[in-house]
Length: 75
Image (cartoon, rainbow, N blue to C red; front, side, top):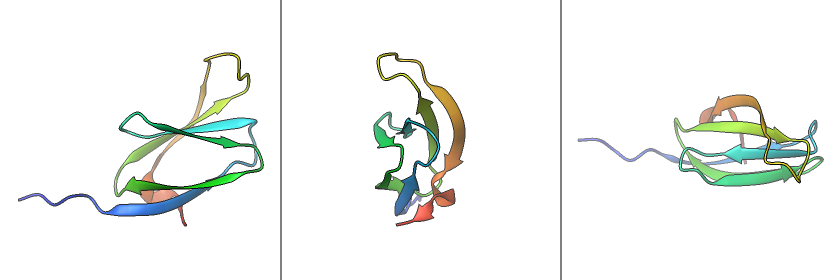
């Protein structure tokens, strides 16, 4: 019998890029503008992609890193 993954409350602060998108495994994204931070819910073991956008009029995104949910700071 499998158990449901544990829900986590984490945070991310964007200090380096004009706009960062946190893309979750289910496809939803959270925007974090430079100088701001966001808290979010995620699941233990989930992989979250951290993407930078330099031009908001373009759909071009640069992968900064892929990080496991457990590696983000606790909120």
